[in-house]
Image (cartoon, rainbow, N blue to C red; front, side, top):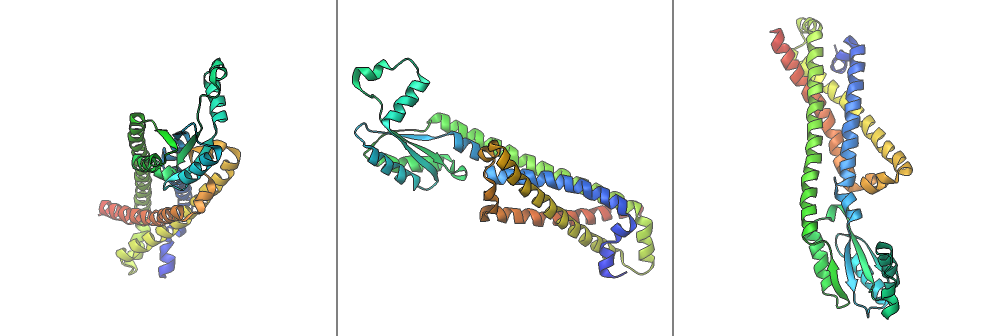
Amino acid sequence: MTPVSLCWVDWKLSVKAMLRESAVRFFLLLLLAAYFTAMLLSGGMNRFLSGQWAVTAILRVSVSAEEGQGIAGKAAGLPGVRSAAYKDPETSWKEFLAAYPGLEALRTAGGNPLPGYVEIRMLPDRFTETDIRSMETALRLLPQVESLLSGGEVLSRLLRVKRWVNGLFWAGFGLLCAVFFLVLFLQEKTRASILSVDFGFLEERGIPAARIAFSRALGAALTGELLSLAAAGATVSWFFLLEKRLALIGRVIGPAEDILALPFLLPLGLFLLAAPLLHGGASLLGWRAAHAVRK
């Protein structure tokens, strides 16, 4: 047999079994790709929390609307800041009444008692205590800023919980990878045992066992690469389609166009590289285990 045909010997000897196994592998790779994509885009809890939690810079009463807009522009330019929006005193008053109805008399007694403020939100990957404190330090230097509200100790506890939850999410991904590799190994071991007579026939015809093992591993790696490309492509398409129909996807996981950014493409490339390596490694280990049983 030629080296190329030897790579696909399993497909020639057991087509139906290979098709069934490939279907299972594609489904598992689809789960892994979807999980991995969601974690990369969302940062775990980072995107959701950064969208919900805002740092509020309370301005002095004497600050004009033009100054407030300027401060919001300066805040938006700080490292780690995603957005900064100025809310004038009138907006502050309306929000106050919406939260505490029935207190309209406070204004008739002496005009609008509330100042304007700037609402600041952090980038998902910069939603850390260090970045938030750094941003607060820069804003405190501005004389127009009277105080900053970020949550204090509550924020610190929230960020600690976020780190634990993100760690659990990544541990779950690692567990899925381990299960995937175990499935690959069991499939390869079982198939190598079932086809042991055929492989023995090839060895008797002068083809070394090591050559058969490595050729099969190469074929498994190539199959794994094709399956991982299909799974990654299906996952990306799925995110683009779902984001248009479910606004929750964009808020919790992130905009689908971020998939095309370099910070995402590099980890995706590692995923596409790891999948064939797992397939090839499982093939070699499965061959070795089956060979040991046969002996």
